[in-house]
Structure formats: structure tokens, C-alpha cells
Length: 142
Image 1 (cartoon, rainbow, N blue to C red):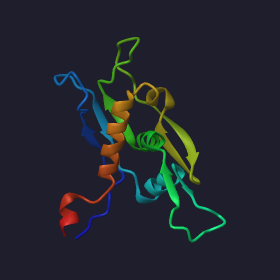
Image 2 (image 1 turned 135 degrees about the horizontal axis):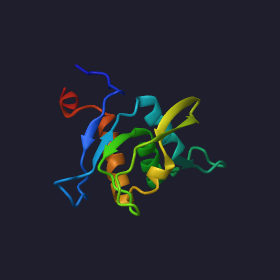
Image 3 (image 1 turned 30 degrees about the horizontal axis):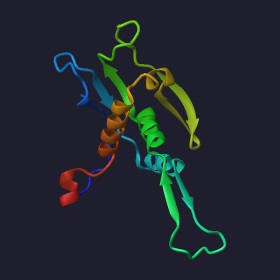
Image 4 (image 1 turned 135 degrees about the vertical axis):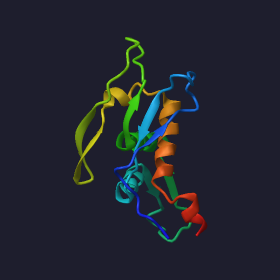
């Protein structure tokens, strides 16, 4: 039996890169709906084929992995606890902005927050958000 994804659900996640396991940063990661995930993948993927020979099987697809990770976190990060500002050393307040993308309006994490998430952590968060948006291990077995 397959259960639909609950796009309102969030999961707490602690990065493997977090040096402070006692007072770790807790990332609140959400789930991307199937349409949004597909649209993000389409935006970051380019295809190249020889227009003079369209049946040529040597077409090339390129995925901008860094941009994909950024977009997944932009839409999938729903909050955090204990994320410290690098200059003030104070906890950062999570905030969102409203954007129009893919013909819809979304509330997403602000750029001021995205720009200070270390790139390794951003990639890790994107991977975890992507995992949450798919079938569970149990559903895959069935």
C-alpha cells in the first residue's frame, strides 16, 4: 500500500557536520510535493542534441547540482533551532519571503538565511529533503 506524502509534515534533522552534539542546530525540513520537485528538476536541467541529426543517441543532459540543492532547500527548509549568526553569535530568527514561481505563490526561506548556510550543510539538507519527498523503504519493498 502506498501512502500519499504529507506536505505539511516536518522532520527534525541534525547535520553530520554539526560540531556541537549537545546543543546542535536542529533543522526543520519539509517535504516537496511531486509537482514542485519535478519543476525544480526541470529548471536546473539542460538538454543538448544535434538539431541536424535529432536521432543521434549522443544527446547530453546536464544538471546544475548546486542550483538544484539551493532550490530544494529554498522550498523545503521550514525552520530551525540554534542556528547562530556568524557575526553576532546570537540565534538567528527564521523568516520567509513570498515568491511567485512556476505559476504559484510560495513562502520560502529568505535569501539572507540561505546565503549563510554553509555549502556542505546546504547540500546535506537538500539530500535529506529529497529523501523525504519519495517512497519510504517499506513502500519500495512492496
